[in-house]
Amino acid sequence: MSRYFRAEIAENRPLGKDYGILTFAPSETAVEPEAGQFYMIGRCAGKNGVSLIPVSCRDLRDPLLKRPFSFFRKTRTGYQILYRIKGKWTAMMRDMKQGSSLHVLGPLGNSYPPLPKGHTPVIVGGGLGIASVFSLAEKFAGSAYIFYGTRTTEELVMLDELKGFAKRLLISTDDGSCGAKGCITDMIRNFGGEDPAGMYTLYACGPRAMMAALDSIAKERGMKGYVSLEENMACGIGACLGCVVKTVTGHQRVCKEGPVFDIGEVLW
Amino acid sequence: MNFSVEIGGLKLRNPVMTASGTFGYGEEYSEFVDLNRLGAVVVKGLSLAPKEGNPPPRIVETAAGMLNAIGLQNIGIERFIKESLPFLRGFDTPVVANFFGDSVNEYAEAARRLNDAEGIGALEMNISCPNKEAGWRVFGTDPGETSTVVRAVRKATRLPLIVKLSPNVTDIASIARVAEDAGADAVSLINTITGMAIDIRTRRPKLANITGGLSGPAVKPVALRMVWEVYRAVKIPVVGMGGIMDAADALEFILAGATAVGVGTANFINPAATLDIIEGMEAFMREQGLQDIGELRGKLEV
Ligand SMILES: Cc1cc2nc3c(=O)[nH]c(=O)nc-3n(C[C@H](O)[C@H](O)[C@H](O)COP(=O)(O)OP(=O)(O)OC[C@H]3O[C@@H](n4cnc5c(N)ncnc54)[C@H](O)[C@@H]3O)c2cc1C
Ligand SMILES: Cc1cc2nc3c(=O)[nH]c(=O)nc-3n(C[C@H](O)[C@H](O)[C@H](O)COP(=O)(O)O)c2cc1C
Ligand code: FES
Image (tube, rainbow over all chains, first blue to last red):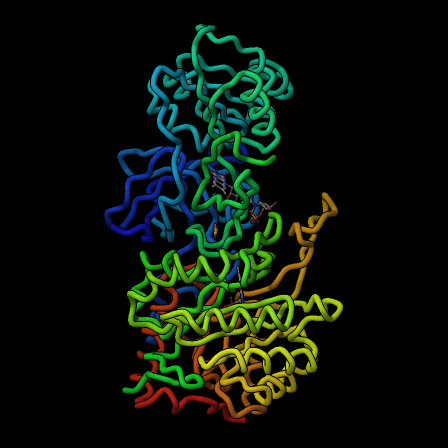
C-alpha cells in the first residue's frame, strides 16, 4: 500500500461554470482517506521509450508542482475531488479525459477530530470549502447542521446530497439569489439551534475571513471548533516548510500538523 | 561498474545527494525512498538557535520553477541532534549537515557543535546569508567575507567541509577559489537565484517576503554554466545542483565537471525522484559501456 501512486481518471465531469468533479482510480491498493485529508495531484509522464532514462519528471515542467485537493468523496469507481478552475493546472485538469493518468500523493495531513460526546456537529462550508467538509457531513448522516455559503446560486453545488446528509441545511449567498442574503457567518451568529442548551462543535472550511469570523463567534459562545486551512504547498509531506500558518504555538505546517486546526489556535 | 565517488574524504555509494531544504531531515521521505540507496542525505539548513522563518505565503510557482522564501526556518542544532539524527543513524548513508549563521562566530560555533555529534559524515555551510556584524553583507557574495567565515569554520571542524556557493554573484569561480584557499574540501552549487513575482491585481508581491529563491528546471542552464566555470577554477570536488529533474539532467552536470549532484525541487514533483535518477544514470552507464562514473566527469567536449 503506497501513498504515492499512479491513478487513472475514471470520470471527470464539469459542475456549473467553474467547477468539476474528478474521480480517480488508483493503480494499486491505496490508503483509505479520512474526512479532512487531502491529495497532491499532478500530471503523469510515464516512460518515454526513446532512451533508457526513466522520464520521472521530464515534460512535466509547466505546471511544475503538484497541487493540493481535498478528499471529497469515495465512490464505487474511486476517490473524488471537487475542483474549481483557478489557474494553470486546474484549467488543464478540466480538459483531461477519462482514462488519462495522474500522479497522486496521499492521503495527506490530519483529519477532522471526532465529535465530543453529547455534542451536535455544525458543519460550515464557504465556497469551495464544501469540498473538505462534504465527506464529514456524509459521515454524520443526518445529525449535523450544515451551513453553506457562496457568492451566487451558480456556485452552490451538490445541494440534494447535502440536504440528504443534514439535520438541517442552511444556505446563504452574497447576492441573495438563494437562501439568506449575506455572509454565512451572520447566519451562524444568529443561529440559536433547535436545542438551546445543546453543545455544538464547529467543523469549517472556507475563505480565511469566514474562518476568522467563526473564531470570534466560537469564542463568544464558548464553542469548540475545527477549521481546515490552505497555504501554497510544494512537497505536501512536511519537508519543505513552505506551507506554514501562524498559530499560538508558532509556525505549523498545513500539510503535516494540519490542514485541520483547533480554531482557537490559529492566529488570523 | 563503479558508481561510487568521493567528496573531500566523504565516500558516497553513488553521486546522488539530496539538496538541503528539499528533503527535510530525511524521515519525511523515508516512506517513499529507501534512504540506504542514496549517495548522501543533506538535511535542512541548521542554526545554533531554532528559527521561525518568514511569514506565509512562502512558496509560489513560476514558469518551470518555484520561488521560496522559507527564511531558513529550522529546529536548531540541539533538537536536530536529539530528535532527527538518531533516525538517520539507522541508515548506512552519510548524513551531510547543512548549516548557517548570521556572524562568523555563530558559523564556527555551529560547526563545532555538529562536529561533536555522532553520525554526521560531512558539513555543508550555506554562505548565502547576511553577516549582522558587517552591515548585513552576504557572506557568499563578498570574497573577503567568504574567506573569513570559511577559515573560521575550517578551524572548528575536522569533518569534510563543503562550501555551498551563492549564484547571486558576477564571478562565481573567484568565490570558489577563495573558498578553496580558505580550506574547503569541496564546493556545492548552486543555491537558489534571488527572484520575485507580482500579483498584478493586488499589486502586491506573491511572497510575503517580497523576494525569494528561484529553483527548479528554470535555473538549470545557469547552474550548469556555473558548475562548468567552477570546475575549471578549482581542484577540489564540485557538487552540482540546480534544476535536476532526471538522470539526463544529472549527467549534464557530471559532464560539466561535477563529482556528485544534488536533487532538490524534483523531490516535490516526484518523491522518489532521487531513486529514478540513480537508476537512470546506471542505465546510461551500461548503455554507454562505462565502467566508472569518473569516466564522464568533466568530459565536456569543447
Ligand atoms: C489542503 C488544501 C486543500 C485544497 N482543496 C481544494 C479542493 O478540494 N478543490 C480545489 O479546487 N482547490 C483546493 N485547494 C486549492 C488548490 O490547491 C488551488 O486552487 C490550486 O493549487 C490552483 O492551482 P492552479 O494551477 O489551477 O492555479 P495556479 O496557476 O497555481 O494559481 C492560481 C491561483 O491559485 C492560487 N493558489 C496556488 N496554489 C494554491 C494553494 N495551494 N492553495 C490556495 N491557492 C493556491 C495562486 O496563488 C493563484 O492566485 C486546496 C488547497 C489546500 C492547501
Ligand atoms: C524550499 C527550499 C528550501 C531550501 N532550503 C535550503 C537550505 O536550508 N539551505 C541551503 O543551503 N539551500 C536550501 N535550498 C536550496 C537547494 O538546496 C538547492 O540549492 C536549490 O534549490 C537548487 O536546486 P533545485 O533546483 O534542484 O531545487 C532550498 C531550496 C528550496 C526549494
Ligand atoms: S508543503 Fe512542504 S512542508 Fe507543507
